[in-house]
Image 1 (tube, helix red, strand yellow):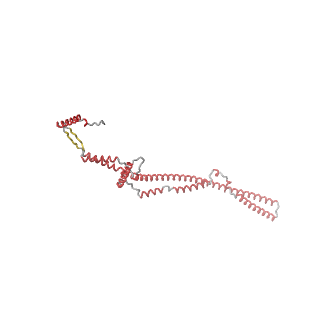
Image 2 (cartoon, one colour):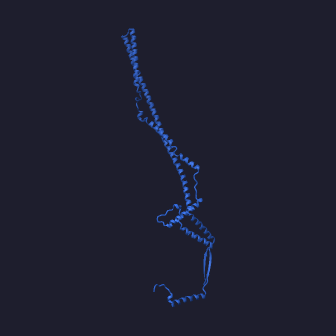
Image 3 (cartoon, helix red, strand yellow):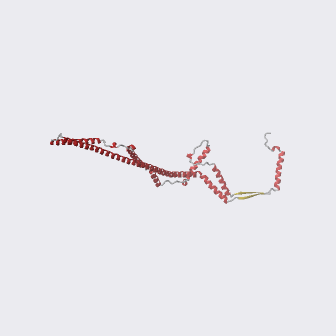
Length: 339
């Protein structure tokens, strides 16, 4: 009975493409992947010379691909001149409030020190009027009374001179007149002294009331100064918070700009490092598509049955071999070793 063999093979040119693809895949498996040029390659401990050379060759190829792909490498646009100017202005504005607040704080501190030196305790409001009396009041009173006494003596002498002219000096009526004059003079002297004392007391009482009013006004000013200082603190906190927020926003923009540059560098390095694999993948996809468009061909081979003559010749040859081996044992070598 005839034997038929069937082989399903692609078109010859498709088969050649598949063979080439397989060879490239196998060849690519032995190439190390590097992401730096030859300057960044150094032999590691335990690394063989062949492996080190393979990495050096791969690094040279990487540099070549990187140069070839420079026109396709991702780029990051730098900041526009207006953006740079805006950022500089924003940065200059940070903390600009500080000198003005510092001056205001210094002025408020100086005013508080001046107010604090006045003394606004309860004892100050309870000071006696005597503390506000003029230190020269006693001298004024003594001088006034001395002048009053001098005038009184002059008047008394005038009365005596009149009595002497009338010839009544030493009489009873003259004594009564002088006594009455002395009593009136003493009363007026006492009134004068009391008036001077009352005037000094009134002036002291007025000074004390004015002092109380002044201290009250100072207390109000001190309270207002405290509120002003508190307002300065709140303004400083608010300005500081604004500066922190502004700096955070500027930092985020700069960080995004820097990260974009790092991403572009990383993408360019990835393109140069994996270009062979990506090209092989595209090649494989193209070959696969071609194979799908050109299905395999079936080749049939018929093997006929042997004829009686071929069978007889085969049997005769076999018998002749056996007969020769029996009659000539030395011609059959079984390789049994030395005899």
